Length: 141
Length: 141
DNA sequence: CTTGAACCTCTACCTACTGTAGCTTGTAAG
DNA sequence: CTTACAAGCTACAGTAGGTAGAGGTTCAAG
Image 1 (cartoon, each protein chain N blue to C red):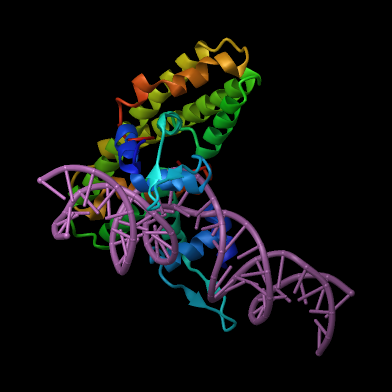
Image 2 (cartoon, rainbow over the protein chains, first blue to last red):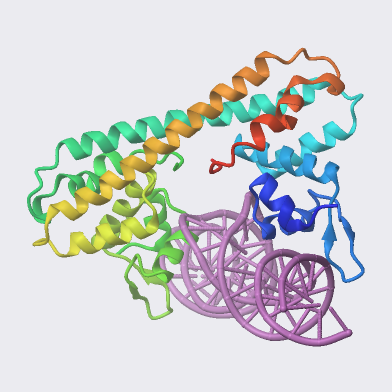
């Protein structure tokens, strides 16, 4: 039987985060000692490890909830899992594309800075530039 | 004199967001009509455009606050602006690196999926894999 | 003068946690 | 057996960066 602190250390999670996962129903309510402290088993460790790994891969808690549901029904089609993972991959790729454009813009901006006073700072000028800004109302990062 | 709705349309911002920026002190309190409605001038449009453009480049509101402060004191050194922009560039590059690793992992995972039932789904197996997860407690995405 | 779109304030909600206050439990040492 | 104290508990507040809705008021066109 593991205490919440041990579980936290073994999965690299904060104690509060574990209680939070329980609160939102991602982790089942564990057994308690007479005094009311939580005690976990190995299946909790596995489940939490799964959650943390998926989080590291950028899955939202909602997606993880779906994955756990699928995982609990082993006879369902793998295609659902596949679909969720594909969606995640797409999102990651979109984010990368956006960040890359952003990186280029920042580099360009910095390349033009003459390092003089703010009055004629290129960086601020670029940021002030309406032409680029008012015409493009795409999503932020 | 512009209404808040016009300002919103011209900058691609939601009306509530403009009021939110005012609330946190990023935008100055504008003049009001007798009835209490906000009315903006061109300087407000410029400032908001600046904010939105910087947000699109991924700057935090705190960083934008700094940039606006610098912008209001044109005699200060451009180096401060440069420093903020460099910090931003670094952050973006870190995020890209992380996302790219993530993309590779997702692709690898999906490549191995046999599309059978969940019972032997590779995606879930990878997510369950302790070896990778319990040993690496790096920051999430 | 009427209509209705756009404005107002205020409050609550979102994600995914994190931190704090004030109190209780568990455990090891003496 | 007692004591000390780390680690646990609940409950609530706060973070970023907004977004949504209720319920009421104002503005401008027809």
